[in-house]
Length: 237
Image (cartoon, rainbow, N blue to C red):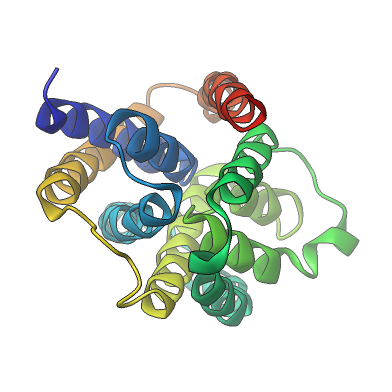
């Protein structure tokens, strides 16, 4: 199968997840870029930020149009993560590839369906989310959605839309810190990948209206567990 076809398929799946779940798709972007498209871990995390920023911004527009974005709450949550995202993005290029892959696998394994979070843990949620975004090139929606629902009391649909605002801001901050350090980004792969992800995000939004959020999250959690297992095995072996 050609690199272009793989990029289009992977992009569509990731966009579908972002549009439907308000996050999570970016956790698949990095392993897809590494294992399917031959990117190095450091370059893959930078490329993922480009893809996630563009796709999340597009999906955000679709959700905002339907009134499913809590702008004030989302802005405050996102601002807490801007500085950590920028700082983590700046140092990510100096982290050994094996450590980066292992850390990513552990984060993916922790991506679970939304549940109620203790208020004490919510205080640093925005900052922690920004750090994860900057270091590993993931949007962190799988962390943002539970916090927005369980701690801040948003409805699930509103939390999904609002998380896209958080993802867009954090990803852009981390990407800014990495400007000029991305290495060979292979735009001939990133461009179609991003285009397919953007189109997939629109379909994901429609899918979310037909299937319950809990069902979508559980399916995605099982997929992430499989990805995390493969990545950890790669690091160990």
